[in-house]
Image 1 (cartoon, rainbow, N blue to C red):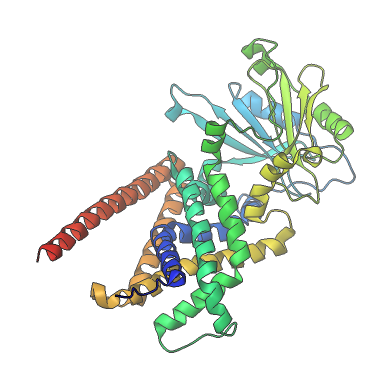
Image 2 (image 1 turned 90 degrees about the vertical axis):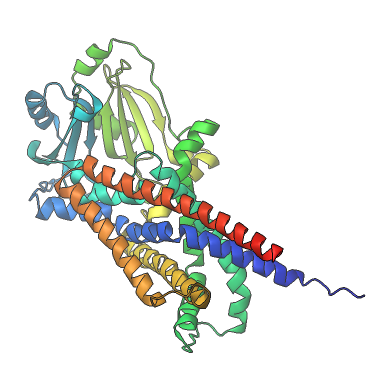
Length: 449
C-alpha cells in the first residue's frame, strides 16, 4: 500500500496559524489596551503642559537672555512650610515658558500614611506658583495604565509578556500573510462579506504597520520585563553610580544645596547637558545628581548624568551616552523608540496613528475569529455586536479607573485595577483548565463509543 506524501508546507502553515491564533486571541485584549493607551501616552508631556497652563494657570516668565535658572528662594519657602520633607525631586522645564516642579514626601507612621506634595515653580522669577496632587493627575494615569495596567504587583510583567506575545503575533502574521499578499494586489480589499472584509483589512494594516509593530513589541517586552531581567541577570542601568557614604544621614539631609551654583557647575562641566531632573542625597553620600538630555539624540530622556559633591560642588561622576558602549546605547534607546520621544510632535502624531492601527488589529482579529467559529460555537449574538460590546466595556473600565484616579485617589484606582486585572487573569486560567478537562472527557467518550 502506497503512503500519501506529507505536505510539509501545509503542516508548517497550519502550525503558524495556530500560534498566531492563540497568541492573538489570549493576549489580544491586553495588546489592544496597550496600543490604545500608548497612542495617547506618547503625548503625556504635551498633555501635562496644557493642563498646567490652562487648568492650574501656571506658566513661567520668559528669560531675557541665557541666564541660569533660579530656584533657591522658592525651595527655601517650601522648606519653611514643610521642614520634614524627604525625597525631594526637582524637575526642570523642557522649554521656555514652562514651569519647574518640586515633588517630595512627608513620611507618616507607615507607608500608607505617607503624604506626597507637588509644587509649581517659576525658574526665572524664583517663586512658587501653586501646587497639585501629582499622583492623581491625568499624566500619571496614562503612564501607569500603559506601563503596568495600573496594577502594582505584577502588572509591569504582564505588560512585558503581552509584548512577547505581540512579537510572536507580528512574526507569525508576516510569515502567514506575506505569501498571501503576493497573490492579492496591494492594497485590494474584497467586500464579499464582513468576515472577508475584516480579514483583508487585518492583513493589509498588519503588513503596513509591520516594522512599527515589531519595534513597539520588542521595546515594550524589554521595558515591561526590565525590572526582573535586571534582578535575575544583574543588569546595571547606564550611568549607574553609587557615591560612597562620607557623613551621617541626618547631617547629609540637613545640608543646604545652593542650586544656583549647581547650575553654574553643570554649565561649565557638561555644557551640552539640558537638566531634566535633580536630587540631593539623604543617605550620607553628600552628593547631587543632575540627569538630563542632549538635543538631537535618539535616547530616553535624562539618560545623561553629572554627579557633584554636595560640599565642594566638584564633579564626582559624569555619564555622557555619546561616549558609552554599544550595549549601554542599546539600553538607552529602548524607551525613546517605544514612545517616539526623539523626533518632535510630527513623529508622535505618526506613532499615535500607527498605535491606533495596531489596536484595530486586535479588534479585527477578534471579529475574524468570531466569524470563523460562529457555526461551530452557535452563538446567539452577531460577532460585530459582540466585539462592539467588549470594546465599549473595556473603554468604560478605562474611563472609570481614570475618574477614580483623578478625582478620588491613586490608591483607590490602583485597588480597582488590581481587582479587575487579577480577577480577569484568575477567571481566564480557571476557564482554560475547565475547558481543557471537558474537551479531554468528550474525546475519551467518543473513543469508547
